[in-house]
Every structure is written in C-alpha cells, then in structure tokens.
Image (spheres, rainbow, N blue to C red):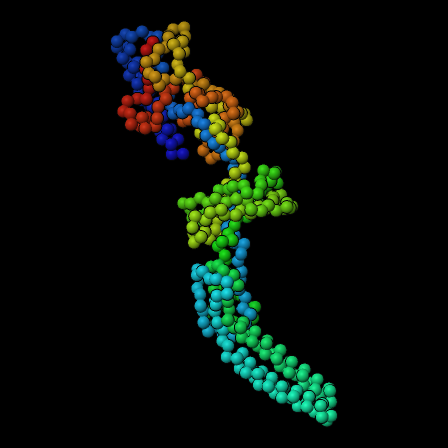
Length: 393
C-alpha cells in the first residue's frame, strides 16, 4: 500500500515536470524557430520483473481457538473449612498431588466414636454366641448382634473415605488455570474448587465447508499463527475428521494436532485465538508472478508486459522514433490464465513465459501501446531530473 502511494506521488511529480518542460520547450521553439512538426514523446516510469519458478500452495484459511482436550474442573468430595491451599494458579501439578486441605477434626471425632461402637458390637456378638451355645440365647439375638457389628464397620469405612476426601488432590497432570477457594472458606460437597488444563493435549478444532471436505485427509499439514505467540508459526496436522456434517452450518469438524510446540507450552494458552492455513494443494516449479501485477476486467485476468521498442515503433506520417535508452519499452496488454495463488504470488498457466517482462507497478495508469521506462521507486524519488526521456526524431 505504501509502495503504491509513493508511486502515485512520484507519478504526479513526473507529470508536473513534463507539463512544465513542455511549456519551456514551446517557448524555446518559438525563439529558435524550430520546425513545428517536432514532437517529444514521454516515457511513463514503471517497475517490472521476470516471472519466477516457485512452489505454490493453495490454502484453506479460517480462524479458531486453541482447546485442551484433557481439562477438568476439580470438584470437592469433602465438606469443611479450608485450612490450607497448597498450589496457586499457573503452577504445574502431577496427578494425585495435594491441592488443598479441609478441616478433619469433626470426621476424626466421628471415626473415634465409630471405633468404640465397633468394640461394643464385638462384645455383644461374643455374648450372643456364647448364650446360643449354652442354650439360653436365641439365634435371632446372635444375628442381630452380628448385623450391628457389620453396620458399625461399614460406617467406619464411610468415615475413613470422608477423611480422605478432606484432602483435595489433582485428578490429572497439568497446569492450574483457576482457584475458586481461599483459606478459611467453607467448602461444600460438589463445589468446584480448581480447574486444571493439560497443555500436552492442546488441539485446534476447525470447521471445513462441505464442498472442501473431500480434499482433507488424516495427516494433512496446516500452518497455525496464535495471537498469544505473534512471532511464531506452529506446524499442525489433521488428527481427526468428524463423520457427520453439521446441518445448521453445512460444515465438518476437523481437529488439528500440534506436531511441534517449539518448547513454547507456556506461550500457548487455552482458548487462545488462532489463524489456520490448511494446505489443500501444492504445485512445484510453476511460473509465478506477484499478485499485484494482475488486472481483472469482465471476468478475465490481464497483465501489462514490457516489450523492447523497435526501430519501427512510433512511426507515423511525420516522425520516426529512435531511442538510445536501454530502459525504454512499449506496454502491451496480455490475457493470462491463472492457477493457484497464495497471499503474495499467483500461478500463471498460460499467456506469458519465463522471458516475459511483467509490469508490477504503474500498470494501472497504462494503456496498450504506451511508451514506458523501466525504473524503480528509489531511482524515481532520488532523481533530481524529470522522469522523462526525450526521443530524437
């Protein structure tokens, strides 16, 4: 964009100098009595280049957000006052690591009571069995004593599990992304207390239009640019493709898996905005030109090319043009057929070849047959003389 603005300013200066020069030229002719049929053609400054042989790829571009497939909200199974916080947000934890501790005094007291009750039930069962053997007790009394002991032992197991649940541990390995409790807060059963994300499970889900899904396959490469890591490009591959089409959007879900994190797991964030370029097709050693050189008219694509000015070009009934400047050409408009294109280049299938000089800047103001001078912006800006060339007749 800046290059085009500079070109427009340069062209304006050029035209001003040409008009000023014409006035001076006319006055000089009047004073020196030069022949009236002498003309001074003007060469328009342009930039041009030869096509290049490159590899070019067609991309499907979309946006998405990074998602961790392995993430969990840690739910408290115990109830009580939080007495200790063992980790903070951003810390890495391993599966089974202690995250927080709740008050255990009440549960421990209940366990002591239950243990006393168990001993009591054991004594009652022993007496009932002894009475049954001596014939003074019944079988029902013995069975009731046994049931009471079994119930007390079951209660102990429940209370021991409750005591274990007073210590909150990590169900997976990962990074703490959220802490919802503080020391001294009353925690109830089912309350979400922490959130954990496993960075190794980061992926990018994308939606592919139904018409493009036939070109997508497992292992297909894609380039990913993530806003949280703006200076880096990540390589991903298609890991999974959904077997169904979303009826509301007409798209198919595909999941991209990171191939190489570049040791930047701390840079990539869950839900980070990402820009995806999925490689749909690649062609090697094809003829390419800058996209800015291509013009479109009535659904067809054209380029302006620079052809060498021959001794007969510019000939009319009164004049014959000759030039000693190797940079002077004539502009010609040529229709081309194009193929793949990327953000900077476009493939040319037919219309020009490797030896065709294509005008890349200044073509918007040209007409077929215009006299042009191949130059550069640096030469145009730094030159102190008008950007025109006098052609001796």
